[in-house]
Every structure is written in C-alpha cells, then in structure tokens.
Image 1 (cartoon, rainbow, N blue to C red):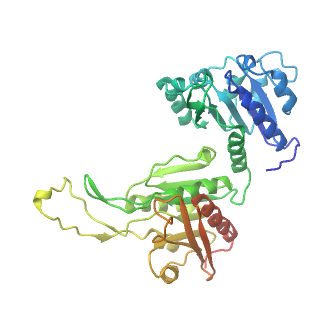
Image 2: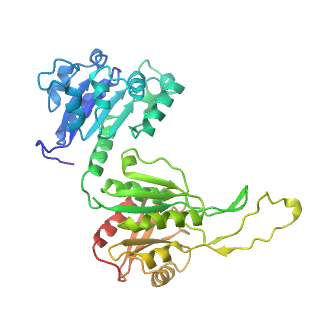
Image 3: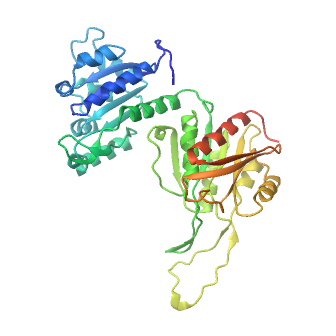
Length: 410
C-alpha cells in the first residue's frame, strides 16, 4: 500500500505501554510512516523506561506525546488525538493498560485518548505467559471485545527472562498488515458502500433432542467470503450455522446472525435480503427436514421411520423476490458430471454467478482450507480456478461479483 503523505493520509495513533516489547513498536512506526500513514505516538510514563520518546519523535509524523498536560500544540491533546484518529493501536498493551482501559480509567494520555476516540481500536497484548493466562486479564479482554475493541492475540515464542510461552508481541510486519487491512476496509474499496449477505456452514435438522441430520460443510469458504468482502469495503451480514473466529481486521464490518436449521436460515436471509446489494448463498442448506421427536429415540424401540419433507428452497425464493439491481450468487457442490449438473442448476436457478466445486477431489470443498471451483455466469461464461486457499478463492469470486454490480437482473 502506498499512500500519499498529505494531510488526508490515514491518521494512526500508536500507543506504547510499559513493556519490554516496546522496542518492536519502533519498527512498526517506521513501517507505517514509510507507507504513507500519519503516525502520532503516545507513550505512557512507564513506556519511557524501556524506549525513548525522542526515538519515536524522530521516526513518526509528529513528536511523541507522553503527558496529558503541557502540550504546546493543543490544550486538550487526548480529544485532539481521539477525534482525528482513523485507528488507535496499542503495542504493546500490558496487563496494567488493559485493566485500566476496561475499567474506563483515564489517568494518563493514552487511556484518555482511548476513551476519547470513536475510531477502531486495536490492542496488541504482550506479557509473560502467567500474566496472559490470568483470569482477570482474560476477563478484561472479554469486556473490551464486547465493546468492539479488536484484540490481536500474542504469539508463542521466546519471552523476556529466557523461557518460552504465549505472550510474545507479534512482529511489526504482522501488526502492520492488520492495521493496513483495517484502514483499507474503512476506505472505499471495490465493494465500498454495498451491503452483502453471506451464508455459511451446513444446516442441522433435528431428529430428536440429541440427533440431527446435517452435512460436512465447515463454513470456511463462507467465512473467507465474509472477511474478504469486508476488506473490499462492504458491510457484511453473515448468516451462519457454525461459530468461528473472524479475522481481527474485519470484525467491525461483519454482523453475525447464528442459525441452526434450514427454516431459521430462510427466515434470517429473507429478512436481510431486501436491503442487500449482494446475496451469496455459500451455505450447504439441507434439502430435507422432519418433525423431530420430543424425546430421545431409544434403540430398544427398533429402527425408527423418518418421514422427510423438503425444506424451503431459499435460493429460488430469493430469485423470485429479487430487486432488479441485486446480485445473487449460488453454490453447487457436485461429485460427478460436475459441469453438466452445474449448468442444469443454472438453468433452473438463473443466478448471476454460480460457484461449483467438485468435492470428490482431494483438498476441495468441505472441511478443507483449500478449494478449487468453476465459475458460471448467467451469460454462459465459465472460468476454472485451480486449487488454492479459500481466501484466494473468495477474492476471485468477489472480483467477479463486483464486475456484475449495476448490470441488473435478467
């Protein structure tokens, strides 16, 4: 990313708390400035015991600040910093800093800035393993996460003192990439200004209180699509049957609706679809359901008779009720005569883009971190994407989707 170094450059407040890992933040500031970000360092008094303010002043876009008082540039530095920031990142975030932030204390410039901003906040904790694993630290982080704070969990590796464990501050390059992704998501990308509904996972139809009919879908491709769509500027509504961690740089732009059955997914999708610009049906929705037994079916009662009935065809209903300017994407998991079956599905359900994967192939589809798909457009074009990560597949799909915006329904 190469941004211009003008007053319109994204403004990053880099907070530094008092931990030995503070030396890594010097390289982070250098990377940010060289990439065109306007960087304002804020050091706690304890941080200056490990690193010098003058070092940050020399590398940053403006002099480092260390106090709530005596700033010659503004009488209220914390509101100036908080209101003008595009992102506040704290690296390292110590257990002490995390606790004060969770309690809402504002007893130094950094905590006051954190409370005075409406910009995204990224905490990069770093501390010894025993401190990281303390219930109080984890509870404080859980509180901050509930309030929308992004937390980049520490690495496992060598720590100060010579031992090895969890609590190591990630390298500057990784933190920089997260910051870059957060800022990119806040700017107008190819999907900027759009709302995208994405479904993920396999639905579960109850047989009785302990058994279900389901499929092998892990939800990985749906989550990859949600995260990539957010990075490309979209506001994402993710309807999912599985609970997975979202990438830290996308969490603020993705709203998750948890469902279990095909009926619940249908209700959620049809509620969200009217205001969506794009609907991507990546979930593996059960074709059949049944009326579940109120109690557990006992083996001693013999083999039960399961009377299956078709579920609602969500994709067909979406196509029947779509807006003329809405883009709809369908998925097809096939095992034989894959192209013929995909083309037949496209005839029955004329989506703007059909994504077909041959799940009989090694490394493709369900439960894998990789995928290989073939894209079919409603105009008859076909493009094969070879085996690659599901994130890369998501980028390819969404690039195709972005080119379809504004073309109108058939």
